[in-house]
Image (cartoon, rainbow, N blue to C red):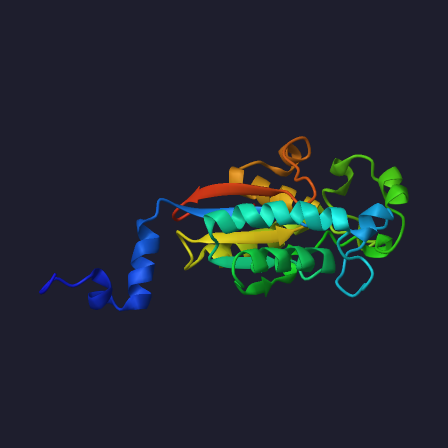
Length: 219
């Protein structure tokens, strides 16, 4: 109608989009675990992105396809991922399903640093550390990252992405242990509570809505 302007004409498009985001009641995070990978099938621990062998299996790609379609149905503004190959391939499938959204790789979403155990038998590792409580503080001699240190890097990541992106939808692609701790930080569980609580299935997506202004505090 003549003489009536939309808010975007007064605010400018970037400011108008920011205004719309503030009007939303929550920020939405999609927590996505990578699909089944060769390293998991072969029962080998793999902490870092340098190993070219451990991509997704066909089963893993099908697991990821379902999560990617669910995220695409809701829509996503930003996509963050661990740089490790199995997570990277998962993020690429989500990006394709969502029309080519850019992938932001962040080392803070990486797998647990297994130290001297990376590249070795997962069964031998679990035999030494059968209870996750045994890994809370890590093992400096072995270079094994503890859950306390992991929470520190993940809390910093969450606060960084939430700053200035409130009201947005963001997909986070990572690994089982980091996602367990991310989830705990978001719902207010301490480390011990996470050991007997939520844990993501391979390729699964969990949607979490958090209130505007939410920030993580780690003691």
